[in-house]
Amino acid sequence: MTSRNRQNTIVAAIMLGMLLAALDQTIVSTALPTIVADLGGANHLSWVVTAYLLAETIMTALIGKFGDLFGRKKAFLASVVLFLIGSFFSGWAGSMACLIAFRAVQGLGAGGLMVTSSAVIADVVPLRERGKYQGAIGAMFGVATVVGPLLGGLFVDQLSWRWAFYVNIPLGVVVVLVAIAALPSVKSDARPRIDYLGILLIALASTGLTLVTSWGGTEYPWGSPTIIGMATGSIVLLVLFVLVERRAEEPMLPMRLFADRVFTVASVLSFVVGFAMLGGITYLPTYLQRVQGASATESGLRMLPLVVGLMATALISGNVISRTGRYKIFPVVGSLIMALGLFLLSTLDANTGFPATSGFMVVLGLGLGCCMQVPTIVVQNTSAYEDLGVATSGVSFLRTLGSSFGVAVFGTIFANRLPAVPTVPSYVDAIQTMFLIAAPIGILSFVVALFLREVPLRDATKAMASSSSGFSEPGSGDSRRELEKVVASIWRQRKGDPGPAILARSGVPLTYAQGWLLVQVYRNSVDDGDATLHELAAQTSVPAGIFEPTASDLVDGGYLTEADGHYRFTGLGTDTFTRLIGAWRVWLLDSLADWEESKDRDFTACVDEIAAELISNSQALSTGRHAGDATALTH
Image (cartoon, rainbow, N blue to C red):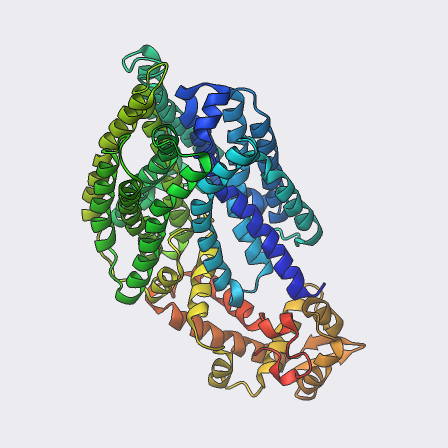
């Protein structure tokens, strides 16, 4: 298998795993009414979704550090195995309690999959090509939001609700087999300190508060000692979390970030939008099935207007933000549209027709789409390099946490309005009350958005916004990886390879092919001091003989020495390599000129490493299209 085919196989398998994890956020929504009819426990219905989201949220904070400690391949495989175990036993569950427990296991695997998938793709895809995969990943999350409810309905109608979980197993096995056979074993040199105590405290506090909102008024009276005690304990845990994060060496969510008003407002906005999004999507299928008489499949199809509206404004807002640099208007206007959509949905009754229902959903979707990506754009734009990773992951963490709270709160309101033996009128009453109470969420989002300060966008942030689909995987928590995403977006927008022009400006008297080969020799000689053309051939799937004329030119020019097929740098070669890296470094710093980080040691070291990677990545080599022309190796 050529390196290009191997890369495509790995990426396809990894994205399949990520797709499975993304689908399971929404696939159960259309199956929930049937699950409740089969297993009972209608008052615990929200926890089928909430348990998954909470577990996913916690794992996204842990898995990146585990990948650095034990290797990303092991972390990825462990995530897939957890996801498969959770999927199998969720499908096998004979009670609501069992289903909820294994949905949590599934959520742990999903959180790990989403973060490690992105990291593994970065390991196998050259930086020059990574931008197009970033766009594909975002689009895939959007597709999952559309397809999830529909697939859930199809499984319920044609097979059983259990197949909404069982379907993951054969596909997940394929992912495991490809990962074992093809993934490189990359282990970071970093030895991060994991903030176990901070993660434990926020996990317990989040679970406690979710239980309060889920059980209050259903399992226990709001004034009962259980609810009051749980609420008090959760608040104490939150206070302890803040204290621990202020002292932790590598906190999962540094408290200093909240000293920046922009980050604070963006985080609250992200939480609120997450709250409204899944809170609304989760319970609409129940109304469509129980009140309008739609089948599970039909209810999935009838959800499409909401998601199409969401995707439309997410794409439009990203492009407008990229061109104008103005972003505040979108969450301000979008929040009002979201509030209107929630209010319109509160008017649904047994006589509401399909056109009206669809129109109300479109309105909610349009509002959500205007707001979704703005918090991430704002935080990426204003964060210093040292905080880029934790700030981006912090915003996505709070969005997912908001989703879990939204599902729980909406579910509590919904369950409180249903009698022991629900009828169509009681479902109407429950859905109307739920959305009427939810409508002020849009107003809250509007008030929060008014405090959002509009900061001029970096050119790099505009590139990220233009390539965004409005959906994205959780942040990695790694500033280097987030900066690579920025560079990949910039590269994607460039027309043609800037390499020849950069080489000309450097003043290095080499052809582009010679410069490329010089960098490859350096990269392969780091460990043992020399490199062979056979090593390059193995990496690029290009015969070693193709490199020989260019290598001979470098030896004749005094840049390399050769003995028994082993090539080493001369003093001139080392100096020339340094000049090449410097020229690319200048190009990168020009592309990132408005970051104002030029004196930050970590930032400049990262830029140097990215510069070397950009020189050595070659699309032509990996495809072999120009293998017969040594002068065109990197075009």
